[in-house]
Image (cartoon, rainbow, N blue to C red; front, top):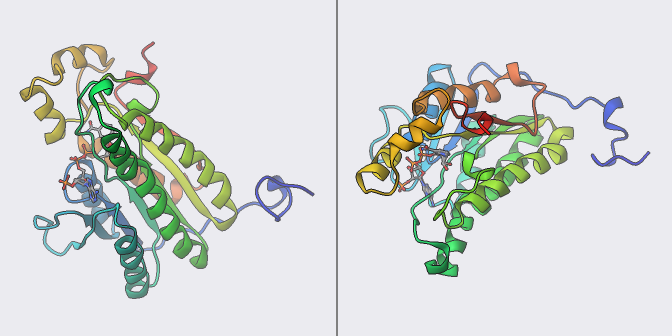
Length: 261
Ligand code: NDP
Protein backbone atom coordinates (compact mmCIF):
# COMPACT_ATOMS: atom_id res chain seq x y z
CA UNK A 1 0.00 0.00 0.00
CA UNK A 2 0.86 3.65 -0.15
CA UNK A 3 3.41 4.84 2.36
CA UNK A 4 4.74 8.31 2.83
CA UNK A 5 8.03 6.62 3.61
CA UNK A 6 8.63 5.24 0.15
CA UNK A 7 7.90 2.01 -1.66
CA UNK A 8 8.56 -0.18 1.35
CA UNK A 9 4.98 -0.51 2.60
CA UNK A 10 3.47 0.84 5.78
CA UNK A 11 6.18 2.04 8.10
CA UNK A 12 4.65 0.14 11.03
CA UNK A 13 5.20 -3.19 9.25
CA UNK A 14 8.75 -2.59 8.11
CA UNK A 15 10.86 -1.45 11.03
CA UNK A 16 13.83 0.52 9.79
CA UNK A 17 17.13 -1.19 10.36
CA UNK A 18 19.24 0.49 13.00
CA UNK A 19 22.90 -0.36 12.77
CA UNK A 20 24.51 -0.70 16.20
CA UNK A 21 27.18 1.89 16.91
CA UNK A 22 30.57 0.51 15.96
CA UNK A 23 33.40 0.27 18.40
CA UNK A 24 35.31 3.15 16.80
CA UNK A 25 32.72 5.12 14.85
CA UNK A 26 33.86 7.62 12.24
CA UNK A 27 32.46 11.02 13.17
CA UNK A 28 32.52 14.24 11.12
CA UNK A 29 32.01 17.57 12.94
CA UNK A 30 31.63 20.76 10.90
CA UNK A 31 32.87 23.90 12.62
CA UNK A 32 34.60 21.60 15.10
CA UNK A 33 37.68 23.76 15.62
CA UNK A 34 36.19 25.90 18.37
CA UNK A 35 33.17 26.53 20.58
CA UNK A 36 30.43 23.91 20.83
CA UNK A 37 31.85 22.01 17.85
CA UNK A 38 35.24 21.59 19.54
CA UNK A 39 33.61 20.46 22.80
CA UNK A 40 31.55 17.95 20.81
CA UNK A 41 34.61 16.68 18.97
CA UNK A 42 36.40 16.23 22.33
CA UNK A 43 33.39 14.42 23.87
CA UNK A 44 33.00 11.98 20.97
CA UNK A 45 36.76 11.35 20.81
CA UNK A 46 36.76 10.64 24.57
CA UNK A 47 33.89 8.18 23.93
CA UNK A 48 36.14 6.33 21.47
CA UNK A 49 35.22 7.81 18.10
CA UNK A 50 37.61 8.74 15.34
CA UNK A 51 36.71 12.42 14.93
CA UNK A 52 37.24 14.42 11.76
CA UNK A 53 36.85 18.19 11.98
CA UNK A 54 35.87 20.33 9.00
CA UNK A 55 36.46 24.04 9.55
CA UNK A 56 37.79 27.19 7.94
CA UNK A 57 40.83 27.24 10.23
CA UNK A 58 42.15 23.99 11.68
CA UNK A 59 45.43 25.42 12.97
CA UNK A 60 44.64 24.86 16.66
CA UNK A 61 43.22 21.33 16.68
CA UNK A 62 44.28 19.05 19.55
CA UNK A 63 47.14 16.72 18.72
CA UNK A 64 46.11 13.70 16.68
CA UNK A 65 42.73 15.13 15.59
CA UNK A 66 42.08 14.74 11.87
CA UNK A 67 41.02 18.00 10.26
CA UNK A 68 40.28 19.34 6.80
CA UNK A 69 40.09 22.99 5.81
CA UNK A 70 36.63 23.59 4.37
CA UNK A 71 34.31 26.51 3.83
CA UNK A 72 31.00 24.66 4.04
CA UNK A 73 29.50 26.90 1.34
CA UNK A 74 32.03 25.55 -1.19
CA UNK A 75 29.89 22.85 -2.75
CA UNK A 76 32.62 21.19 -4.82
CA UNK A 77 35.14 21.10 -1.96
CA UNK A 78 32.49 19.73 0.41
CA UNK A 79 31.65 16.86 -1.95
CA UNK A 80 35.28 16.00 -2.53
CA UNK A 81 36.17 16.01 1.19
CA UNK A 82 33.24 13.72 2.05
CA UNK A 83 34.32 11.38 -0.80
CA UNK A 84 37.89 11.48 0.48
CA UNK A 85 36.81 10.63 4.05
CA UNK A 86 34.60 7.77 2.83
CA UNK A 87 37.44 6.41 0.69
CA UNK A 88 40.01 6.66 3.47
CA UNK A 89 37.89 5.39 6.39
CA UNK A 90 35.41 3.26 4.49
CA UNK A 91 32.41 4.79 6.28
CA UNK A 92 30.86 7.78 8.06
CA UNK A 93 28.85 6.82 11.15
CA UNK A 94 27.97 10.26 12.49
CA UNK A 95 27.73 13.79 11.07
CA UNK A 96 27.42 16.76 13.43
CA UNK A 97 26.19 19.75 11.42
CA UNK A 98 27.52 22.47 13.71
CA UNK A 99 29.23 25.19 11.64
CA UNK A 100 27.18 28.39 11.60
CA UNK A 101 27.49 32.16 11.79
CA UNK A 102 25.52 34.75 13.72
CA UNK A 103 27.50 37.87 12.95
CA UNK A 104 24.97 40.32 11.56
CA UNK A 105 23.29 42.49 14.19
CA UNK A 106 21.86 45.18 11.95
CA UNK A 107 18.15 45.95 12.04
CA UNK A 108 16.51 44.01 9.24
CA UNK A 109 15.64 47.19 7.34
CA UNK A 110 19.36 47.98 7.14
CA UNK A 111 20.46 44.52 6.15
CA UNK A 112 21.26 43.76 2.54
CA UNK A 113 19.63 40.84 0.80
CA UNK A 114 23.14 39.52 0.09
CA UNK A 115 23.86 39.37 3.84
CA UNK A 116 20.56 37.60 4.47
CA UNK A 117 21.33 35.07 1.75
CA UNK A 118 24.86 34.51 3.06
CA UNK A 119 23.35 33.57 6.44
CA UNK A 120 21.01 31.11 4.78
CA UNK A 121 23.85 29.66 2.69
CA UNK A 122 26.02 28.89 5.72
CA UNK A 123 23.35 28.07 8.31
CA UNK A 124 20.75 26.21 6.24
CA UNK A 125 21.91 25.22 2.76
CA UNK A 126 25.36 23.97 3.80
CA UNK A 127 23.93 21.65 6.50
CA UNK A 128 21.58 20.18 3.88
CA UNK A 129 24.48 19.59 1.48
CA UNK A 130 26.63 18.00 4.19
CA UNK A 131 23.77 15.81 5.38
CA UNK A 132 23.00 14.67 1.84
CA UNK A 133 26.63 13.83 1.06
CA UNK A 134 27.07 11.98 4.38
CA UNK A 135 23.73 10.14 4.05
CA UNK A 136 24.82 8.75 0.68
CA UNK A 137 27.73 7.07 2.47
CA UNK A 138 25.61 6.07 5.49
CA UNK A 139 22.96 4.29 3.46
CA UNK A 140 25.52 2.10 1.71
CA UNK A 141 26.78 0.92 5.10
CA UNK A 142 23.28 0.35 6.56
CA UNK A 143 22.81 3.48 8.63
CA UNK A 144 24.20 6.37 10.59
CA UNK A 145 23.25 9.37 12.69
CA UNK A 146 23.07 13.05 11.80
CA UNK A 147 22.79 15.72 14.48
CA UNK A 148 22.00 19.28 13.41
CA UNK A 149 22.67 22.27 15.66
CA UNK A 150 19.58 24.43 15.88
CA UNK A 151 18.99 27.23 18.42
CA UNK A 152 16.31 28.79 20.59
CA UNK A 153 16.28 31.30 17.70
CA UNK A 154 14.34 28.74 15.64
CA UNK A 155 11.20 29.18 17.76
CA UNK A 156 11.51 32.53 19.50
CA UNK A 157 12.03 35.76 17.64
CA UNK A 158 15.33 37.48 18.42
CA UNK A 159 15.62 41.06 17.17
CA UNK A 160 18.41 42.04 14.78
CA UNK A 161 19.37 38.49 13.99
CA UNK A 162 19.29 38.78 10.20
CA UNK A 163 18.53 35.44 8.67
CA UNK A 164 19.68 33.42 11.69
CA UNK A 165 16.19 32.74 13.08
CA UNK A 166 14.82 31.81 9.67
CA UNK A 167 17.79 29.55 8.94
CA UNK A 168 17.51 27.72 12.27
CA UNK A 169 13.75 27.24 11.84
CA UNK A 170 14.66 25.76 8.47
CA UNK A 171 17.19 23.46 10.13
CA UNK A 172 14.46 22.10 12.42
CA UNK A 173 12.07 21.56 9.49
CA UNK A 174 14.87 19.87 7.56
CA UNK A 175 15.62 17.63 10.54
CA UNK A 176 12.05 16.31 10.55
CA UNK A 177 11.85 16.00 6.77
CA UNK A 178 15.15 14.14 6.35
CA UNK A 179 14.35 11.93 9.35
CA UNK A 180 11.17 10.73 7.62
CA UNK A 181 12.88 10.32 4.26
CA UNK A 182 15.97 8.47 5.45
CA UNK A 183 14.53 6.30 8.24
CA UNK A 184 14.14 3.44 5.78
CA UNK A 185 17.92 3.53 5.24
CA UNK A 186 18.69 3.43 8.96
CA UNK A 187 19.84 7.04 8.96
CA UNK A 188 18.54 8.90 12.03
CA UNK A 189 18.37 12.71 11.91
CA UNK A 190 17.92 14.73 15.09
CA UNK A 191 18.68 18.24 16.29
CA UNK A 192 19.88 19.90 19.47
CA UNK A 193 18.59 23.42 20.14
CA UNK A 194 20.95 25.19 22.54
CA UNK A 195 20.03 28.24 24.54
CA UNK A 196 22.70 30.77 25.49
CA UNK A 197 26.00 28.93 25.83
CA UNK A 198 29.11 30.50 27.32
CA UNK A 199 31.24 30.32 24.18
CA UNK A 200 33.77 33.07 23.44
CA UNK A 201 31.42 34.40 20.76
CA UNK A 202 28.50 34.82 23.16
CA UNK A 203 30.67 36.32 25.90
CA UNK A 204 31.97 38.85 23.35
CA UNK A 205 28.40 40.03 22.68
CA UNK A 206 28.34 41.60 26.11
CA UNK A 207 31.78 43.15 25.70
CA UNK A 208 30.61 44.68 22.41
CA UNK A 209 27.41 45.96 24.06
CA UNK A 210 25.24 43.84 21.74
CA UNK A 211 23.53 41.84 24.47
CA UNK A 212 23.26 42.15 28.23
CA UNK A 213 24.02 38.75 29.68
CA UNK A 214 22.58 39.91 33.00
CA UNK A 215 19.14 40.25 31.44
CA UNK A 216 19.59 36.94 29.66
CA UNK A 217 20.55 35.11 32.86
CA UNK A 218 17.41 36.44 34.55
CA UNK A 219 15.30 35.05 31.69
CA UNK A 220 16.79 31.53 32.05
CA UNK A 221 14.97 29.36 34.65
CA UNK A 222 18.23 27.64 35.65
CA UNK A 223 19.77 31.09 36.11
CA UNK A 224 22.99 30.61 34.17
CA UNK A 225 24.40 30.19 30.70
CA UNK A 226 25.13 26.67 29.49
CA UNK A 227 28.56 25.21 28.92
CA UNK A 228 29.66 23.86 25.51
CA UNK A 229 30.19 20.45 27.15
CA UNK A 230 26.50 20.35 28.10
CA UNK A 231 25.55 20.61 24.43
CA UNK A 232 28.22 18.06 23.51
CA UNK A 233 26.67 15.54 25.94
CA UNK A 234 23.26 15.81 24.26
CA UNK A 235 24.84 15.46 20.80
CA UNK A 236 26.82 12.41 21.97
CA UNK A 237 23.64 10.79 23.28
CA UNK A 238 21.77 11.36 20.00
CA UNK A 239 24.77 9.98 18.09
CA UNK A 240 24.84 6.79 20.15
CA UNK A 241 22.78 3.64 19.78
CA UNK A 242 21.11 4.56 23.10
CA UNK A 243 19.08 6.95 20.94
CA UNK A 244 18.24 4.20 18.42
CA UNK A 245 14.49 4.95 18.62
CA UNK A 246 14.90 8.71 18.23
CA UNK A 247 14.67 10.39 14.87
CA UNK A 248 13.24 13.74 13.78
CA UNK A 249 13.49 15.07 17.34
CA UNK A 250 14.63 18.53 18.36
CA UNK A 251 16.07 18.43 21.87
CA UNK A 252 16.24 21.77 23.69
CA UNK A 253 19.28 22.17 25.94
CA UNK A 254 18.64 25.67 27.16
CA UNK A 255 18.32 25.80 30.94
CA UNK A 256 14.54 26.03 30.56
CA UNK A 257 14.53 29.06 28.23
CA UNK A 258 12.00 27.51 25.82
CA UNK A 259 9.87 26.10 28.65
CA UNK A 260 9.43 29.58 30.14
CA UNK A 261 6.31 31.12 28.62
P1 NDP B 1 31.41 29.41 17.02
O1 NDP B 1 31.24 30.63 16.20
O2 NDP B 1 32.15 29.49 18.32
O3 NDP B 1 32.07 28.25 16.15
C1 NDP B 1 31.54 27.95 14.91
C2 NDP B 1 32.63 27.30 14.07
O4 NDP B 1 32.10 27.10 12.75
C3 NDP B 1 33.86 28.19 13.94
O5 NDP B 1 35.04 27.43 14.01
C4 NDP B 1 33.65 28.80 12.58
O6 NDP B 1 34.83 29.17 11.91
C5 NDP B 1 33.01 27.65 11.85
N1 NDP B 1 32.38 28.14 10.62
C6 NDP B 1 31.59 29.23 10.47
N2 NDP B 1 31.28 29.40 9.19
C7 NDP B 1 31.90 28.39 8.51
C8 NDP B 1 31.98 28.04 7.14
N3 NDP B 1 31.37 28.76 6.18
N4 NDP B 1 32.70 26.94 6.81
C9 NDP B 1 33.32 26.22 7.73
N5 NDP B 1 33.29 26.50 9.04
C10 NDP B 1 32.60 27.59 9.42
O7 NDP B 1 29.93 28.85 17.24
P2 NDP B 1 29.28 28.19 18.54
O8 NDP B 1 30.16 27.14 19.08
O9 NDP B 1 28.81 29.27 19.41
O10 NDP B 1 27.97 27.52 17.90
C11 NDP B 1 28.00 26.22 17.34
C12 NDP B 1 26.60 25.87 16.85
O11 NDP B 1 25.66 26.00 17.92
C13 NDP B 1 26.09 26.78 15.74
O12 NDP B 1 25.30 26.04 14.86
C14 NDP B 1 25.25 27.80 16.49
O13 NDP B 1 24.28 28.39 15.67
C15 NDP B 1 24.64 26.91 17.56
N6 NDP B 1 24.21 27.67 18.74
C16 NDP B 1 25.11 28.31 19.56
C17 NDP B 1 24.68 29.00 20.67
C18 NDP B 1 25.62 29.68 21.61
O14 NDP B 1 25.13 30.23 22.61
N7 NDP B 1 26.92 29.66 21.40
C19 NDP B 1 23.25 29.10 20.98
C20 NDP B 1 22.39 28.40 20.07
C21 NDP B 1 22.87 27.72 19.00
P3 NDP B 1 35.37 30.69 12.02
O15 NDP B 1 36.07 30.74 13.35
O16 NDP B 1 36.27 30.83 10.86
O17 NDP B 1 34.17 31.59 11.96
